[in-house]
Amino acid sequence: EGKSLWIVKSLPVATNDVLKAKLHLHIYVTVPAIVLASAAAVYVLIPSILNIVAIIAAPVLFVMLTANIGLICNLKSPKFDWVNETQVIKQSMSVMLAMLFSFLIVAVPGALYFIVLGANFSATLFLLAYTLLLGIGWLISNTWIKTKGVNIFEGLN
Image 1 (cartoon, rainbow, N blue to C red):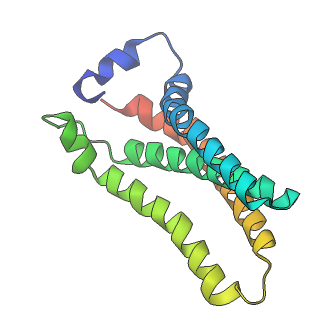
Image 2 (image 1 turned 90 degrees about the vertical axis):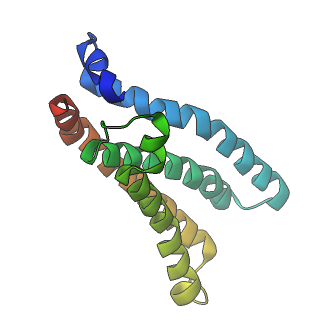
């Protein structure tokens, strides 16, 4: 919104609905492609039922969690003093932090599995545990957005 944030804030819409709309745009654009790619992986790999659940659920939960992380980063460090839209995308601290957190959400568990657990831990159990952790992370971040995030957004000028 940038300099026209006042327009969004003046609408007769609950703040929570404004934040949900921001999240839903990201999710509705990315999830269908991810589900198609996951379905293709299931078709090619012919995995077990547990793996099918994880192959589809983990990427969807990852997208939902990273959408929340991006919104949280934008709420915590918004950039309103931009000259053009490119500045917001390429020079914003919130974008850099969101990309860093998204990378860490994939890299740390992946490194943990391949370096420490790989020989002694089932890949299926690890993928299910990772999916569960993504779901927990999404729940925690979603709760934060609905409470503190709403308050932060209402305080923005």
